[in-house]
Every structure is written in C-alpha cells, then in structure tokens.
Image (tube, rainbow, N blue to C red; front, side):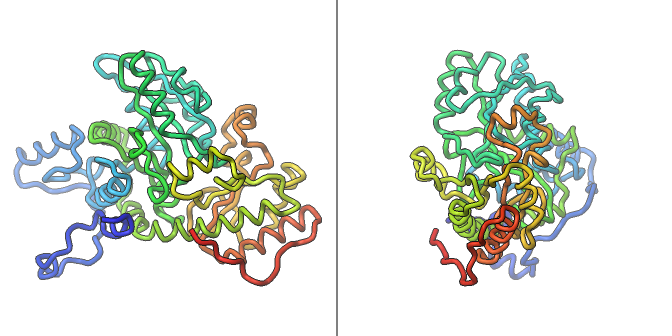
Length: 423
C-alpha cells in the first residue's frame, strides 16, 4: 500500500465480507480493561511467559501493563509507516527515550555498555537526561562528523535528532551510520544508532530506511496532532522491540489505551496535516526572512545551503512545519514579540493543528546549561514556531503586527491572502 492508504488502514484489521456480515464496528473500540480473565491456569501462564519474553501479543493479554489491544493497534500502524519490524509505545516521549537508553546500557553477554555518543542540539529534556547521568549513562557530545571517532568499546548507543529541536539543523543519517559501522570493526561489537525523528514524522523521513536501528517519536506532537494525547513510540527491529517491551513491563511506562486510540486516529490524517502545515510554514519562513525586524530564520532549505539542499533531496521529503527565528533587539524584544501575538498560541509543544510559539531557552531547553545551549545554537532570543493549519494570511498578519509593534517598524502585511505554495 502507498503511504496515505497505510496511514488510514494500518492497525484497523481486515475489511472483508466476513467482518461485514458479523456487523463488526467500523471504528476499532477502546479496551480500557486493566486485567483479563482466564479459563485455565496453564493457558494464562503460557501467555504470561510469552509477554515476559517481549512477544508483541499472546492469546491472553493477562494485565494491561503487559499488553493492551488498543495500544497494539497504534504500534502496528506506526511500525508500518516507519518500515519497521515492530513498535513499542510509551506514556510519553521521554519515557520512550529513557527506555531506549536503558536497553542500550543493559548487560549483553555479561558486558554493560553505558557510554552514549550524542549530537547536539536535541530536545532539552533529552539533553538533560543524558547529561545528568540520572539513569547511569555517560555521554560525550560531538559534531556529526566526529561520531565515529568518539565510539569506544563501552559505547552502547549513538543518539541524534534530525531535524534538531529547536534549530532545525539536519544531520546526515547515512554518514553517521557509515562512521559507526567503521568504528564497530575497531571496538568489536554492534553499536545501535537511534534517531529522534519527531519533527519530520514518517511522512517526511524514515531513518530505518537510511540505516538507523531505532526511531523515536514524541507521539504527543504530530502523530496525535491535536494537543489532546500524550505518548511516545519507538520503531525498531524485533530484537530491540522485545527488549523495550520487557523494560516497559517492569518500569510501568505503558501508554494509556485512550491515548493509544487518539494517537492511532491521528495517524489517519497525518499525511494531510503534515503537508498542509508545511505549506503554511514555507510561506511564513520566507516572509519572516524578509521582515526588517527579523535577524535570522532557521528553516531547512531557506538559506540555499548546498548541504541542506542535498539532504532535502536524499534524506528528507520536505522541510516540515517547524521554524525558528531571532528578532532584532535580543531576548527582551523576543519576549515582547511572543506576548504581543493575538492568534498564535503561546505554549510549549508542537505539531498540533493550531500554531504554537515559545522561546526554547526560557522553556523547553531551560534545563540545558546556558553555555551548552548557546554553543549548540540556542540563544536566549531564539523563538520556535510550530505552524498549524490556520490561514497562512491570518498567521502572517499576527506575526507581522507583533514584530512591528515591538520593534517600531512599519508593518508589511496586506489584506490580500498569500499565494499558496505547491509542495
């Protein structure tokens, strides 16, 4: 099936004459049960053993911390969209990343490998989790072209985010994979590569097809798309999925079935939303880059940089709908711009149908050391804008008014609608 068809159909089960004759619901229901009855002890014990080993499902779900049918439908659908053997859903994106780090650092063949090679910038919570050592990981931060040299015998994971939060920096996944595979010969064991692909979504990027072992999404963002469901999901191989299910079982990070239902529903409109939001973002990025009050705009492909253009042609199927920009006048001017907006919502998060804006240094990346934040391209005057599905003309009018009021320049907005840009 093509991507759009899979987004609608995946995880919903077969549609055939048998199902129609039985009058089964057109929309899969929500299974809210916390436990499941059984007929014989031996049969339920077999199911328990299978789930403890990390199986995707068993004849009896036993207990909701081990398996939930509603969540499983979302996992099956997401795995299909990412071209993965399996997917494992968690209560939040951070719970998913924590589980990946735990799995990477778990003893294998009697050896524990807690060392992580990571590329900045990443989401502030991820940065803090890695840097703080809260779960026993030791991290070294490197530039993308230095990953291979940083791999050691105790390296258990390479972690990167592309496009990066909040600078939209793109990392060449294939090049990182090539470096890691070369380094594996020297260290004598496999080193998995994990890619946070939240900004791109499966619509615009599939890291597994590029050679990555693990793909992480904050499902709260684009996958749900409506700001009403929180979750995280990891798409990966069957081997890694089994280990992640075991970790989820003992740590209790299971996704709630209502959230699983909403996230699965969100996937069905994901291609339409991502492409429409991307069209709006392209318009706004261009307009912002021409505004006298704007110092710089971060948006893939806007600058004409040759490397970005190459990656947009070979790795990512479009620039997406997140952009970041700096205004003239520093952090205080940036704050005033945000607080002068009337239509765009002042809030953290992203990927929703409505547009959201915030200052990363103040909120999402507040937990990152100031020097590390600045050196990775996240100054105090940077604003991150998640572009929604509103009229591009209305969004631009709001931004233009706020920028012009704050920095006392003439507004550029005209009442005529913006020309729609073809994808």
